Length: 383
Image 1 (cartoon, rainbow, N blue to C red):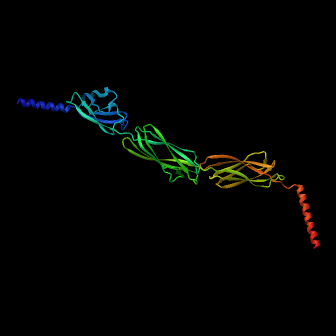
Image 2 (cartoon, rainbow, N blue to C red):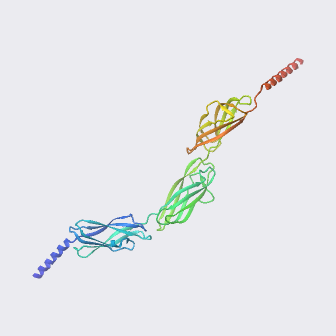
Image 3 (cartoon, rainbow, N blue to C red):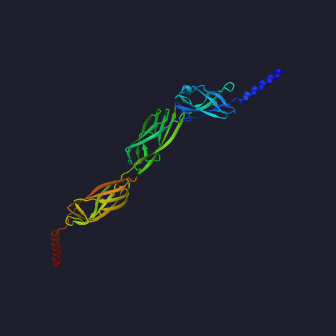
């Protein structure tokens, strides 16, 4: 009977002790960076929880180590706390290094939890993900030489490719799509290949192109497709659009179209043609007559012409006094291109005054006319 009583008391005491023991657990709160990448120095935030109604006394948390997550501070391997209350959490911080060649995956880090008021130890694992950074091969610069490109002109399009990730990329193909543009590849395909670009490095590749002779002045969008593989075997393809400018320039010339000025009649109206011999339109054109010693302007010196299409012209007319037998008329033309860029160009129209009729010439003409009239009268009388 006594044995039964003693055994019963032992069971009750054991149950009471078990009921009073803390209930410890551990889990990952977060990582910085998230996710952890190969080559990182990362910080792991780990939560230790007491899920029981009783406190945990003399808590001891031990990180048992992992081949891919090495502590920066070895002393952090063991953390102790005198007390962790009921339903309380404790966040621990571990600074670790991750090897450059760490494979992608989710890894379990082992921990051991102990308290003086619980029997034995608790082994737990927390999960941490290693995920390589997606490789970033970017088209950082596009240059065209010469620029702007003229219709029918050959040029070189150079592209700078920069590996801004932390892993090498390889098997790089760069394709230029010119089907909807004014460009054609010259002497080669529209795809360039590069074997490898290391992390943090860049390279340049170039295409030889020519613009179509009939290309209109415009900014042409050209898609470049870049495809590559990273060292983990992941394939990436992306398309980047850039603009290439093809511009035909207006060509401005002036000529004297009409005037009654002569060497004897030095004051008259002068008409000057403003001609666009180029392949592009001149927009919002304004003409300014500049001063010259060869003439004196008797009218306004400014004229608004508006748009002058390719192979078209406009006329400005004004009254002037010629100061010598050769007229030099400087015309300053200000206009805008198809890209709304302002241009100012000056051209000079030159005109040599023809000889005019003098008083001696008029007398000679009168004598000749009189002789002709007399001759006709004498001939008719004889008849």
